[in-house]
Length: 327
Image (cartoon, rainbow, N blue to C red; front, side):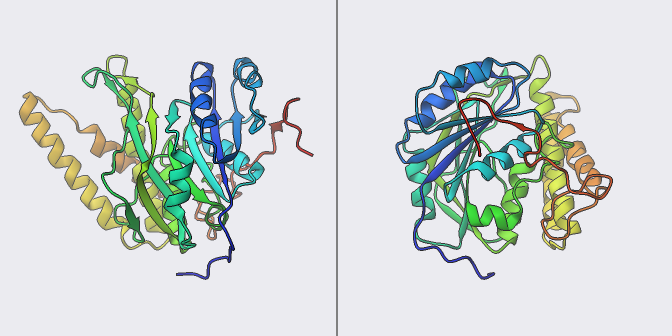
């Protein structure tokens, strides 16, 4: 365990919501977050092409809500911008298609408690009511609190992730090459979890820290399959990066993941009478191969741009609006 920064108390929580071209979701998300009294501020970073989200957020009358327009792209970029703006010692990330529980922030504070070795907490992501035969909603329903110091089963969903400020800074924030809108479209959440643990902190899973996820993707139009391919590709990317930066568990984890997916595909093919479900394995391997190419920052373990420089997405193109003045 590395030497951790001293803190005399745990400061309140900053909620962070990043959004792009989904104005139909933002008010439902904000209504739920605003109901959490423990939050000291709620930051919305908007990368939308239109002004509709800005208009809707401007109509929310809660002094804790801060809005920032960003002309760049990428959910990891947006989250890093919000982290720079935030005043809380706990950075609580959720997505615009989620509704947090009323005790979300309280459960987050309890998950960290007085243990300064805990750097990151993940919670339950519960699927909203939907037809599972027609739609897919990413979800995660842990049954008990679990503390994690190793990387064998490292996995997170950015829809419900709370990070201690000191741990976020020590890890270098989100890798802006990863995640929706980035060069690679997934993996940013698990990647941050891995880098926080490797920075010397522990991770906890807290089931009572829950959000409801409304982000249904349809199988018929192919959107569910595309999302699943991205998830598997992102998982492979993260494992490649881990392997290249000295994590000896990465290759065994990859081998286990390939084997389990292959067995699942064989069983599904037998059940359905045709070859099916092979894409999960294919895109996992493709992701791993893709992760072997980009240069990696030796300090933060984030991918570098092809010119060898860090991907600049930390707010250079921020455009503040009238209701949020940043001196």
